[in-house]
Image 1 (cartoon, one colour):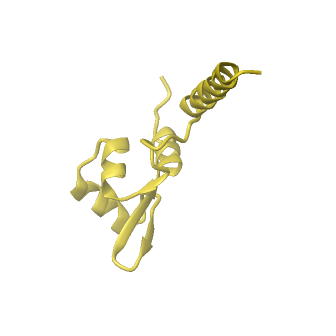
Image 2: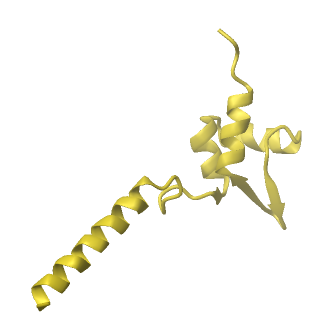
Length: 86
């Protein structure tokens, strides 16, 4: 077993791992929990509207101190709940 064969095996393993990471629903570019910008991105609402919904407890969120947190999956479910039947 030569060094070339070992390197080929290593490359194959790296390729498999990268492919598995790319297929994962949780990649580094899609934070599961984030701030107001995540809520704006998912809902397409203005920051002021989101703050109003938070005050009315109309949108899923968490608060720690004076910082708001939004969960991507909770927001997607909330948007889905609001869909009208065709």
